[in-house]
Length: 164
Ligand SMILES: CC(C)(COP(=O)(O)OP(=O)(O)OC[C@H]1O[C@@H](n2cnc3c(N)ncnc32)[C@H](O)[C@@H]1OP(=O)(O)O)[C@@H](O)C(=O)NCCC(=O)NCCS
Image 1 (cartoon, rainbow, N blue to C red):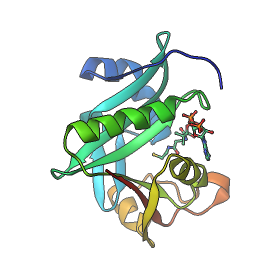
Image 2: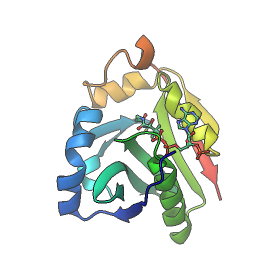
Image 3: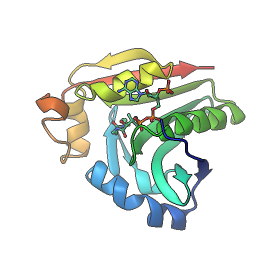
Image 4: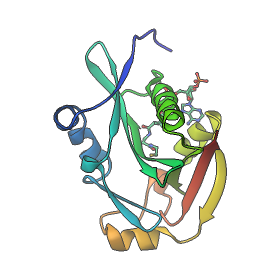
């Protein structure tokens, strides 16, 4: 791993627009993300950004779900393998704890085996499988592709959690 100096901070609306919205809109085919029957507008969510020497390495969007849970809605590293995702996870755990949350959770689709592997490596536990749920998400966001990573049909949602 390269030796890099990171900063992770919560972005203001202006910083968000300038720094990551173009990346996010490209990655998620727009600023709306559908998951477990809900549609999230990334542009309205708080966002953490990992920066090294002024360069954006990655970002994540999250929201509070009730009083005691925090949900990671979308995360991407623009430069992979430099530790930005680890740092973003660390930062969101710290935000969760500061706000009295007892659980951090997220959803990935069944094709995203890389993310499933990454989150388990980081200590998340697989806690739910929603068979066929992507069909419901597609009703909210018709642009969700039918086929994802490694030509795997995108059909199911897998939930991961970390409890404190
Ligand atoms: C998943 C993703 C965020 C990981 O980002 P990354 O830049 O590779 O992550 P980091 O460099 O911070 O990796 C940190 C650690 O995770 C490990 N890791 C990275 N990818 C891994 C994988 N696929 N399986 C297991 N461990 C993995 C690294 O070895 C490293 O381990 P260490 O902390 O013990 O040294 C990135 O691949 C990505 O942006 N994917 C596309 C978007 C996406 O799928 N997001 C998740 C769904 S919201």
